[in-house]
Image 1 (cartoon, helix red, strand yellow):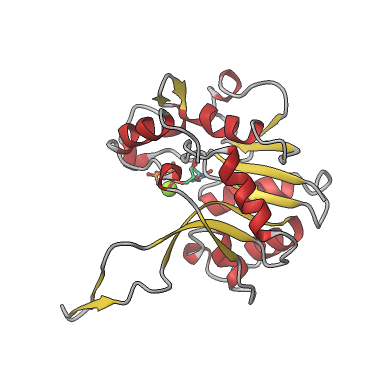
Image 2 (cartoon, helix red, strand yellow):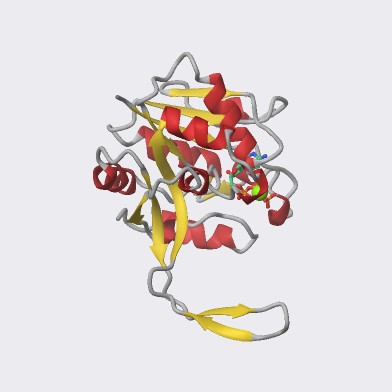
Length: 227
Ligand code: CTP
Ligand code: MG
C-alpha cells in the first residue's frame, strides 16, 4: 500500500479577514500552500500529493509545482465535504488499503520529519493516527449556569494534522458520519466507528494559521530548523 497526501485547500479563510483565501497569503516569501505542498514533496515516503480546491479557484495553478501533485477541483461547503469529495474523486485511483494523510493547507510548518514520525508510529495499526500536542495549559470549563471548574489536563491532547487512515476506512467514516457538524476533524469520524486512532506527538511549528497574527508565528517557525 502507498502513502498519499490529501490537502483540503478550498476554504475562504473568513477569520483571517484578508482580501483572498488565506492559503495564498505570502509567508516567508512563498504562498502558504506552496510551503504545505513542499513538505510532502520533500518526504520520500509520500507517493503522491492531491490538493482539493474549489471549482472556480483562479490561483492554484500558479502555486503548485507540476510534478508529483494533482489538483482536484471539487471543494465543498465544509472541510469535511471537501475531503469527502476528494476521496470520492480518487475512487478509481487509490486502493482500499492505501494510507491517506489528510493535512490542512493552513498548516505550512509541517516537515518531512513530522510526516515520517507519524507514518512510523502508526505502522500497520488499522485505526490510523494523527499528530497531536499534549495540553500544557490549565484548562477551565465554564458551565451553562456560570459555574467554573478546572478540567484535569491529564490525557488531553490538541489535534493537529496530518491525520492518517486507510483510504476505505476514511471514506466510509466521513460518508457515514451521522452528525456532519460534529466532524471537526477526520479522526472524530473514525472514532465514531469505534476505532482509537493513535495520538503521535506533533510540534508547535505545525500550527494552523487561522488569525492574522498567526502569519508571524508561522514565519518564525519556517525560519527555524526542522524537528
Ligand atoms: N477547507 C476546505 N474546504 C472548506 C473549508 C475549509 O478545504 N469548505 C480547508 C481550508 O482551506 C484549510 C483547512 O480546511 O486548509 C482547515 O480549515 P480552516 O482553517 O477553518 O480554513 P478556512 O475554513 O478557510 O478558514 P475560516 O474557518 O476562518 O473561514
Ligand atoms: Mg473553516
